[in-house]
Image (cartoon, rainbow, N blue to C red; front, side):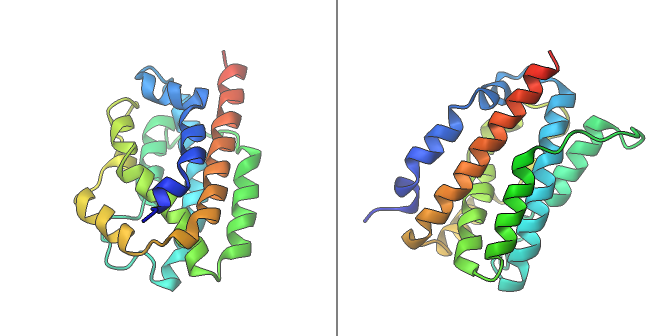
Length: 184
């Protein structure tokens, strides 16, 4: 039987091949650039998780929520006393608008949780020791059980929406690369 992972492999691979991902994996990413990435991720995760909770999509998954961990990592690297904030990439607004359009459809939201949270549970573990700071974003108390809990809520009918989420992630990586090139 074909899995959701197999059905989205092309988009996943495209996202992973972006130049910004190479910077994330390099172990040499500038802390302010990484903080900018976290800042952009924060808004997307916050809205996604807020919309998922009423549907019970995150129940029985203690420790899966990432918003506060992302915020903590951002504040550590950016500094709580810094009076300015990083730029918000245009794709963040587009993503948030999209989530608001689908917020009443649990299956569509679950496709986004799959791409984002399963990615954090899996590939994020390879990034965790490469980024500056504490890396709370990628720390899970029981990653294997969380992966299993996410898998129980998936079906292949989520493939189209998961592809949409991968496209948003790819666009964020491209826009982050523009910021990286601007700050050289």
